[in-house]
Length: 199
Ligand SMILES: [Zn+2]
Image (cartoon, rainbow, N blue to C red; front, side):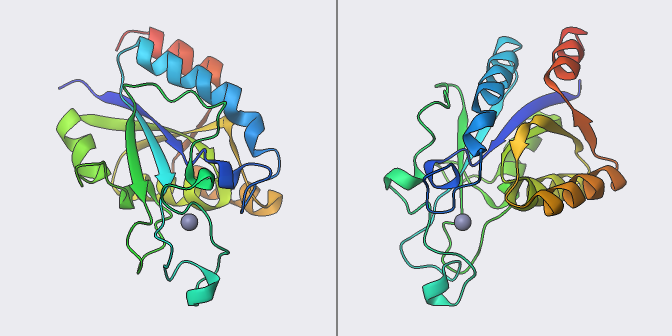
């Protein structure tokens, strides 16, 4: 079976962009790059996964229930919507995480599609072996997703021109950590030439 590649866009939601409840500084600046990657993968008929933080109103993830964060990305609120400039195509597979009020849901591997199917089960069914990961935030959900993927033996490519972190130092450490675990760092030109090699 041919090794299949997929794109994963992590949490490009209003609450994680400037002006949002947990706005990442300049988080919106990666959106044009992300849109380009989405187009590239769709043109090659490769799967595009788009995750979203999708919390209930009350969850242990929020400060008022003893968690680390102010309320954000509450289901069916504007903050939980994808950023309006992020063009989410109809073919994209939307994955929701943080639904369980007892769990944080940092990793996309904790996310499920609308039918309740988990990310990893979908990847197995599709024969996906390589993940190209971009989105927000480098030092949280992109980090956890990438490390989980490496642990689960996927080949991981972090899209360095399509990620943004909360803390610069922590984001640098994250990149070092991913490289130390044999994750790859890629830019758009790397990926577009890889995908046109026809394998
Ligand atoms: Zn969250």
